[in-house]
Amino acid sequence: MEITKLYESWCKNAVEDQDLIAELESIRGNEKEIYERFYTALKFGTAGLRGVIGVGTNRMNIYVVRQATQGLANYVINKYGKGAVAISHDSRIKADLFMIEAAKVLAANGIKTYITTELQPTPVLSYLVRYFKCQAGIMVTASHNPAKYNGYKAYGEDGCQMTDNAAQAVYDEITKLDIFSDVKTMDFDEAIEKGLIEYVDDSVYDSYLDCVLEQQVNPGICADADISVVYTPLNGAGNKLVRKVLSKIGVKEINVVKEQEMPDGNFTTCPYPNPEIKEALQKGLELCEEKQPDLLLATDPDSDRVGIAVKDYDGSYRLITGNEDGVMLTNYILSCKKANGTLPEKPVVVKTIVSTKLINKLCEKYDCELKNVLTGFKYIGEVILNLEKKGEENRYLFGFEESYGYLSGTYVRDKDAVVASMLICEMTAYYKKQGKSLAEVIDGLYEEFGYYLNQTFAFEFEGAEGMQKMADLMSSTRENLPASVGKYKVVKVSDYQLKKETDLVTGEVEQLTLPTSNVIALHLEGDNGVIIRPSGTEPKIKLYITAVGTDKVNAIAVCDEIVAASKQLLGL
Image (cartoon, rainbow, N blue to C red; front, side, top):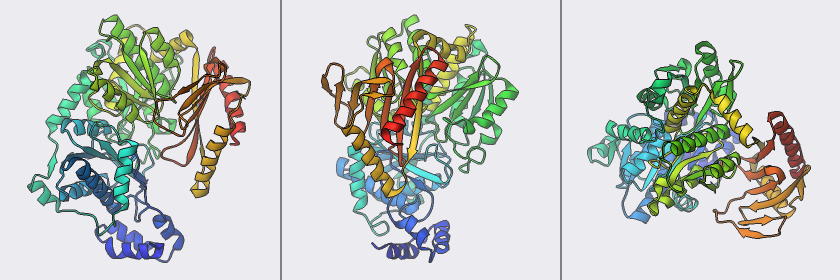
């Protein structure tokens, strides 16, 4: 439909949300603003939907949410005949409204829907899908994006985010629908009365917490070690459950950052609420200076990821990377379970291909199988599912990704900042009883295995022209593979789109079994490496650099050389 006609159609039909009515009127006659909102539609993918809140097909609003949910309903009915769906939300602007609107569409299609009475962490939604044996799940969140964004994560019956095939099937259904005339909806109170929409009982959250508590490695150690914590939920969904689980394991002193304690989708004190960046943790770090805790914990708005800072040798607070936290947690779980005799036979640890290779050394030390998967926690969930099918789920110990996502246990199929926060506190207490800080622990691992420095760099390519440039860059790299990056020889190339791995030393070629993905990994001598991939959610090319040195200074020098050579190689 021509954009002006599309705009007029919205003016005529979008009459239920006063904010949208006002926005439509405010852009009347402004071709640029109208174009920006209507030139395309948000595409439904494995991460569901994500976009700026506002009016139009290229924005997050009740009509886009309804249309997507009708597509999901059609998919569920086509595949299962009937079904059930669980829905929750975080603290995002209009998140509770979008949850209700999605529930009304599902109910109108005869699909039983379970909704939460208040905001909940994303892993709880994954748990609800499995608990109620649903065929799908919806989490209304935009993760760590700025306040103007909202989103809609879709889950399959296994509690993992949707696979490529399932997401494509839902998208195909969505594209058949007129956003106004082809979407069913019903009165919310009527749906409640008919039992088509049901609120989740508090006892279900208690059962989720019981599953989290089962992942303790050394129960009672937090009370014995008397640790203190500064915690910030970054105005998101983690506040209640993280504090509750920490209290249950014996953390007596939990100092919460007051400005970031309560849900607030405006994120006024952390405009980019991402625990990966220092600015988001600034308020927490300020409180650390006052309280002098053992640990700073920060969970992102939907509480599936957690960042930490620990006291350094000079009394300041050191930010710990996602890779470092993942390595320490893996080491803690493996070493303690081996010592207390609870390490299963043939234990399994899972990491994404862009996460640190230091974990390889740890797994070798403990004779643990390491599985590498593509970026996206659903692939870690898939490993758990495959183990479960063989009756071997107890072999799974831990999974993590460099972007601060961790999971111990098989009760959910997504990263979980609640269980990660618990284990981080337990780990802190364990080493405190030995007279060690976590700064000393990670430095000790570097001394034992080598200093593995991992850095991620992102390069933006805006608009349609930018997307083409990204595609050309990946094709050019694939067709002109380098013999070296700087002074470091390329010894192996893994191409996840061509699904082959070539050993440049022996000439041997192996087939890769992971799903097809537009990713190229250059393995360099000395265990160094460069991974190149387009972002799945943003118009960016990402470089993941691994630099190995004898110490931090040496590793930084190695990293700088590899980064400079990689940028020159790719023309960035």
